[in-house]
Structure formats: C-alpha cells, structure tokens
Image (cartoon, rainbow, N blue to C red; front, side, top):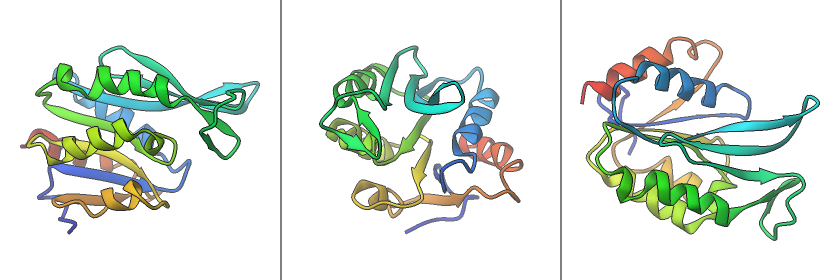
Length: 179
C-alpha cells in the first residue's frame, strides 16, 4: 500500500529513462550534506556522445562499472553486458552492515541490471524494512522486484514529471530529515 509523501519515510521515485531520476537523487544528496548517508547512485558512461554503459558510485567511496557495451557477460540487458560480480562488491561495501545506521539510505536504481544480483535484491528488501528513511529510484516498467518494490508497505511512489522535478528535491529532503 502506497502512502502519501507527507507521511512516508520510504520514498520511491519513478519515471521513464531520461526523466531526471538520478539528477533528482544528486540534488537531494547535495542537500543532505552533513548527514550520514549510505548507498549509491548511477551515472552514464559516454564515449564521443554515445552512451556505452553505466557506473555505480558508492556514497562511501566505492565504484563499479555496472554495465558496458563491450562486456562479454552472460548477463545482458539490451546491448549491455552486466558485471554482476563487480556490482556485488559495491553492494557489500555500500549496503552491508558496514554502512550500519545511516541517517538516510539512497539506492539509484532498482532496475533490470541491478536486479540481476540476488544480493542487491535481498539487501534492498532489508533496507526497506529498516526503520530509517530511504530514497530510491525504480524503473517505470518491469516485473519481479521492480514491481514488488512499488508495493512495499509504507512506500510513497512519486513520478518525476517536467512539472514537479524542480520542486521535488526540497520536498523529499524535508520528508527524509523530519523522521
């Protein structure tokens, strides 16, 4: 059951690719300076203006190339090979007990590539059942854990739209730190 944003400590942001979900997360992170924040965000890898992959950037300093057009992986999403093992190293460093008790958890994103990792799915489920505030992004479409996450108890699901994306960071920060 989804709850109104005004009541939620667990905020899930959704929208189509390129709508500004990661930009929103980065703006929220800028405003959370001084708080203990754990998790990761993603960024595109580009070569000569062409997207060639994605990198996960841990908030405690780890980095992992999540996917790349040149990865010869058996795990594929579209034209990208996904490095599940490398991503799981980042998950252990950023979402494990070593990052215990942050003021806010941040997960960008719950998507097809990330959900290839059972460790990611189980860690994310555990974080959503914790008492602490969570900000996560989720793909607009998808089954399995992508769909499940949108229906977790106590979650406010927000769509990023051109009409609200500039106002959302301040609203989300206020809700996350009010807990």
